[in-house]
Image (tube, rainbow, N blue to C red):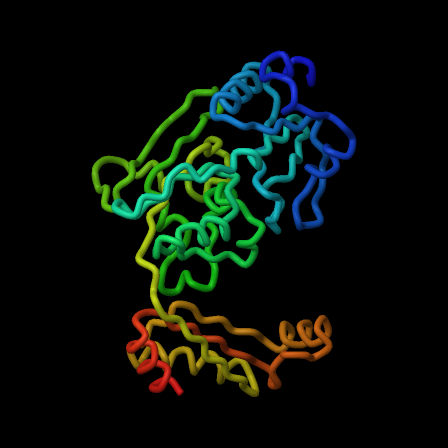
Length: 290
């Protein structure tokens, strides 16, 4: 099969070297199954040709971003072809006037956040693996993070997609506007579909103004019940933090074991609350929450 793919796609992006197959057999989870061949796509056209070939020959294809998931989504459990999108890593456009970014799926989440920050813009979704995970993977899994409390998850920021369907057909849906209420929401259908409906090759993302100030409060509690009750009190008082995180005794003990207790708070539960906004507003809210 390798030679057929080389003839179809060109040399330099197809490999069946044992170390390459092993590296693309799993993610951060324990599940693992090696593919027969790995294709490192660099263009939408290559993805289209590959999926058309695979469909015609009934060969399974498993798309892969950075491989930092924990649910086995990129594990090629049926063998076949592992389609790596890591080389499709260009930030094509950051437009301040439209407040959008157009990216390829291999762009690392934290890299985009840093780039848009330079223009005083903000991409809120913050999965724990944002320094390593790709935006294509975020779209496939509808990734979130602590900021989902105030800002939502990946689906809330995808306004346009370019997707290659299983037969190789290229579909463009959505656009580059924040408000698009006409017709069926095909963008929302693809986000979170884990690659089962098609392979995303371009993403248009909505951006927000960058909050100029941010502050974090932390508190330790004797138990999770008291910590959770405090969160409810924060909401009842009319506050909407940018993020809220709770750590239970198991998590804290694991952190103490890993770090030798350095920097890990006392107690059996820990609460982190992040606020953002204008400096004056953040200062006032900080004082009231204390």
